[in-house]
Length: 296
Image 1: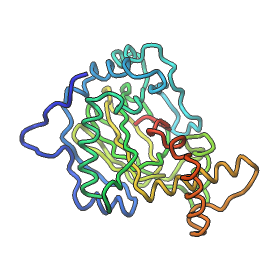
Image 2: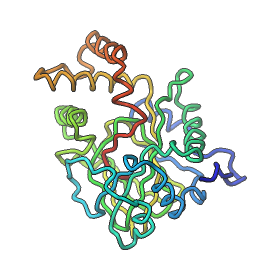
Image 3: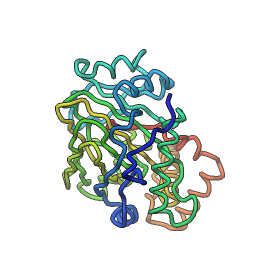
């Protein structure tokens, strides 16, 4: 793999964020962003096909391009013997693939960290608050559909090639939201059972992107070309704590108990997060962000 390549000399930054991003990160609202990554040789279809062949089989998720908007089951992982060949022929193979944890390859790790260092400069309340960084690449056939799902991390979805519409939604009510959160930790990994209500579409072309906060339902319709995009994810201390509590509650549900959801008891939330840290379960549940619910 080649090392991080130079960006346009006209831009010192890789991302265009600003005050709107910092505010959206705090209030957990989706917001449009822009970037200067389109045209980077690391993101050609050929380079990504090579990356897919270089990654471990368990770091590649693949599924058919033609999906229903509600598809509750998590997609398969490691099912393609040579995923690079699928990517090289996406015009005819009607598939989408997600490459997990691209930071396993040094060139992509360098680029991911350069981008997220810029994010940290905008959102960090204290040094190191942007943590547990991970990167994913999504590549899919023309007119593919990604079912409605959500992610547990803060996500920055950046369009690199082709076009797509990302529709941001909301759950019908708090009860539905909590049920879907619990399904995530019980194995659904973000694929939802009930179609959320559409709130706002984001039409993405190369150089454009969207910030998606944790537990923000969304779904995707690709345009008439092969689509390539990258998602950069991170936790903050608060979002990491939220997920520690959810992970603890998932353990209790497996034992037939009915735990109190996060946010209803500060004392219980602190205790649950502390126990999870003490057990070291964070590495098992968050380890390098390899769980994935859908393909963008």
